[in-house]
Length: 140
Image 1 (cartoon, rainbow, N blue to C red):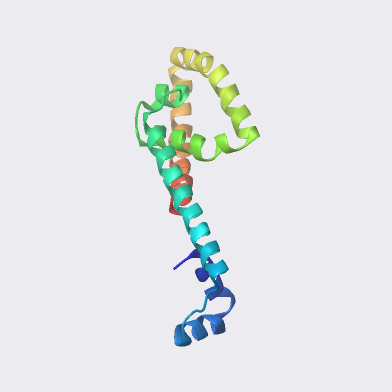
Image 2: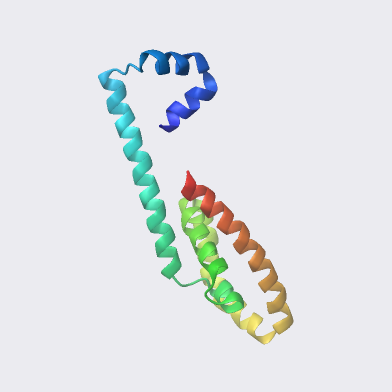
């Protein structure tokens, strides 16, 4: 069942019942548009999976890697970066700033273990939230 059909069920149950009883009639143009929409959804899903898989291998999460090491939270933060932040201009500016300042922040954190512990707690929470957001995006 397509997303359009699901939306139509919520919008007009009479049409859904009529289609169920008598069969849905689609024009050739509607079928072409439906195929095009399904192909676009499939392509987006495949692209999202590829981004998520690539995020598992990419580095440059300086602070997260220092605080947490290579773990599920670090991978989730990378996937969030790729699926959400890289898609917008403000997100790309944030990433560029992070890459510029990240090594200095890591140097500071490595000299202050208490501060590193506090950052670690924040990153665990951020990683958990990022994992939920990524899972929602990939489920769409």
